[in-house]
Image 1 (cartoon, rainbow, N blue to C red):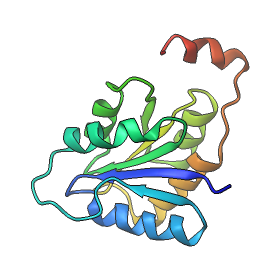
Image 2 (image 1 turned 120 degrees about the vertical axis):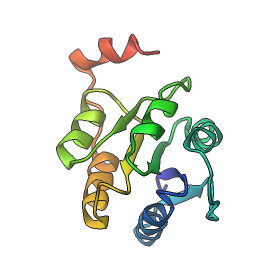
Image 3 (image 1 turned 45 degrees about the horizontal axis):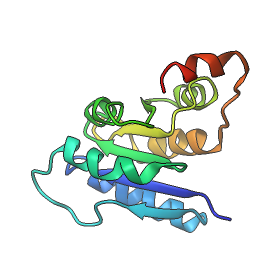
Image 4 (image 1 turned 180 degrees about the vertical axis):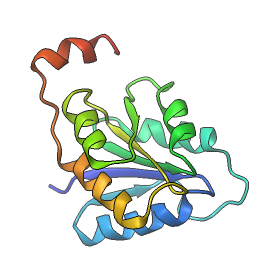
Length: 140
């Protein structure tokens, strides 16, 4: 069964989200795009609050100008552990140690290739559990 990924972005992240979406689909992921059309002036909290409930047992990729706004908003939602990552090692640790289920990316800070490497590191890394589980349980 193909892995399901929930995508969203504000206007600043739209082009990068579209690039990542195309690549995910080509690789066989099931993509749920929460905002398939560009809306000028849309606000990142609105995008997050629409997309976050769709993540549930899946994973999400949320893109804005810096990744910071999406991450702040996403972490206000129950059941979401979001990480704003700017390098693959951060994405790996966000999943392995923190069981993050939403990756936030900054379209104004990353190249397409950087974002793609970060995204696939995030998606292919599993939570290690063990000593990290007790910490993650405190976030629930």
